[in-house]
Image (cartoon, rainbow, N blue to C red; front, top):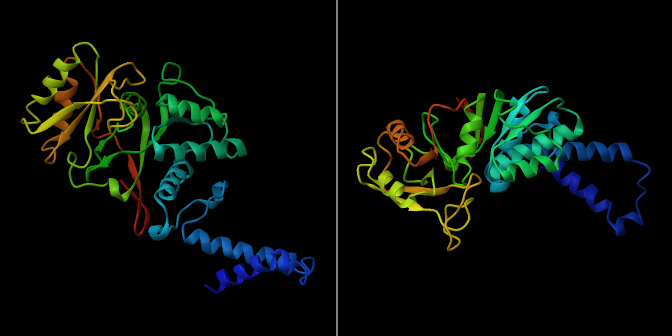
Length: 305
């Protein structure tokens, strides 16, 4: 606290009024030391945003940190801990994954990582990565990835996931299934005892006879007639209706969201039944794919493996 008060005093001394009575030439070294100390204290409180890999966010008090800052902390940590020069990196989609892309862009521009190639999982991610000048490719030319980093909508104790709230789960699964390591980045609110009630499971389906496919999904044995499949309307990147037209994914398909009142009894069985349903392109259950989950929680950032 004394350091923070002292740093505030330095800030006050820099005001237009103080400049009339203080000489700033006499103590530049002392002032710099005060601010370095101040930055260290603020970093411990979770406010560090340095572009340097050496200022990784390892010790974070998340109690006073905003949701966006929590996303930034886990996104930056994933890049700092798992990405090295020469890697092929899968880039996920969503607000948390965007923070990882931001971090990778910083390190690429600074030269701290070199000779990387990134495979984006959506048009939104591609545009963001291009804005940083990150070299991009697809699975057609780079089918084997060193690591993929992405967020999730739900994570169960076995590290199974629900993904696809942003409508990119088909491309996400295609890319992340090819990664040697799949690193998931979330805040603690995404952890659940069982998948289902907390977030609808998205399923990408063909436009052809989509109502037939929607009904077939609702009748799957693993659902036991206890879930409702709802056609996504408006923007494909949101599972909340925000328009009158059917949402269309980046791949030209429709999406239905399966809403549950009870936990999914057998998520692996449901995943198998969904993918075997004619008309289903891909679903948002990611079973047995996760290497590690980086979590921002009330006690700080920690890793589940």
